[in-house]
Amino acid sequence: MGKIVLVLVLLTLVHVLAVNAVSVVDRLKIWPMPKSVSHGHGSLFVNKDFELKTEGTKYNDASAVLKDGFSRLLHVLRVDHVVDGNSSDANTSFLLQGLHVVVLSPDDELQYGIDESYKLSVPASGKPVFAFLEAQTVYGALHGLQTFSQLCYFNFTTSVIEVPMVPWTIIDQPRFSYRGLLIDTSRHYLPLPVIKNVIDSMAYAKLNVMHWHIVDTQSFPLEIPSFPKLWDGAYSISERYTFADAAEIVSYAQRRGINVLAEIDVPGHALSWGIGYPSLWPSKQCQQPLDVSNQFTFKVIDGILSDFSKVFKFRFVHLGGDEVDTSCWTSTPHVRKWLTKHRMNESQAYQYFVLRAQNIALSHGYEIVNWEETFNNFGSKLSRKTVVHNWLGGGVAKQVVEAGLRCIVSNQDKWYLDHLDTTWQQFYMNEPLTNITNPEQQKLVIGGEVCMWGEHIDGSDIEQTIWPRAAAAAERLWTSYNKLAKDPRQVTGRLAHFRCLLNQRGVAAAPLAGPGRVAPEEPGSCYAQ
Image (cartoon, rainbow, N blue to C red; front, side, top):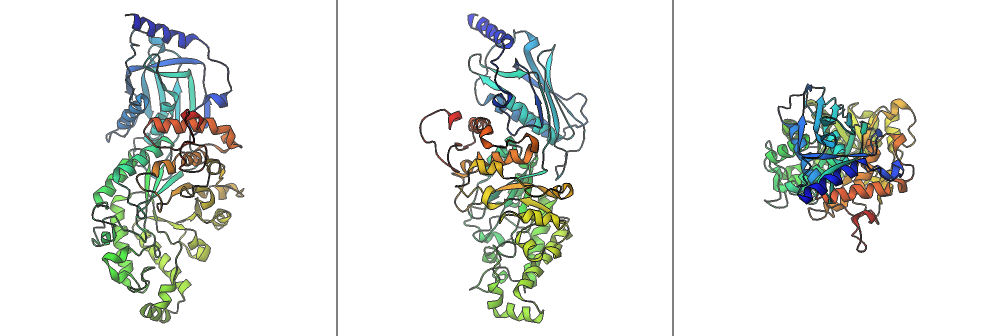
């Protein structure tokens, strides 16, 4: 009985006592920072039977996207602690009974450019007390759930979940519609649970596109039903993904508001294709790029994209097109003969290959993403449905949008996660709209992406290589420009808090101090590292 009384006294005291006056910048721990935030100085306590209410919503949740999102919310709020504080007899005016969610659109199709905005309010008191979340789409509501999760913490004194600084009013929406993270399953195979863990962690930071660089020179791990020998190029029979696995990854991501952008990189980076189909190589001695003179090459690409269209429902498909060394074409007699017959040099053949692959993708209903070399070499020839993926350096995005094409920014000097010497501060300060001042051209930069190339990562170290640096880029892509810090030192404490939150949720995010994937320097608090 004495413990219950103590808990009730503590609950009441915490609510009525004013918190110490500190600046809003220091006190707000939300990452990424919302567009508009206001808060008070009171506290609420989350009922052990915290419930989801949906009265007035237009979304029937037939596929349980919202219900499952709410279940995940409860899990991350508890972070595996035993929530056994007895708050049932506390003043119900200070007891948060649940979350009332209203989704205004009945549609749950996830696609590029959907409305991801939300409004979240948590009152200071009431009878009964419910937080309120309104969103145009269920995916905006999922973002609101992520933000709500960061307003709460487990109180170790009372063994209840507390919501401090009420009342809260948050109005939020993303700055860019494309906020991506690339994973690479060719250089090292990533088991399905590892990929799913990455997807979960992306949702915490409100990233919304997982760019799946599926195949490359080193291996071809994915089953392609139309051409079943392609995955003979896998490292081993157990380092593979079935077509059903791919569908599961897409579904798992979709239910968390994350699109999957599938990539087949052509014509270069494709040696592994020829393990199962050697005729795709120019010759056994010269094995890439893919044989431009062979009609079978394009039949295979068509088959892959036909299969892709059944599973990868994102508007875009990535066709690569980078780092193409065409010397194999000119040094292989039958390809050289074909070039002569068609009056092409190797540069023209590169253009021919990329444009033909683009047309195949278009025929399957896709818009196309290509690496920037395609634009640098023959930008005026690209389909107007092309999004140019900038990676080599600054200035290209400006040229792309001046040409009227869309662009994704991933400049390697700032947003390549495999560059371990690039600090989180550099990730944070990398601005996708650098030197792009025309408002209409700014709209053509659809967003950005951090790239986790897989040469030196696998399931053992991928999380600490991605986080927390990807979170720094995530705020750059989500938060309104005028709310972004002009000096990364202003956000160090808040990012450290988010990094520790990831750790608490089971994500192996590395310390902020030092370069990427750094180990803690010495004993100490998570928040000081």
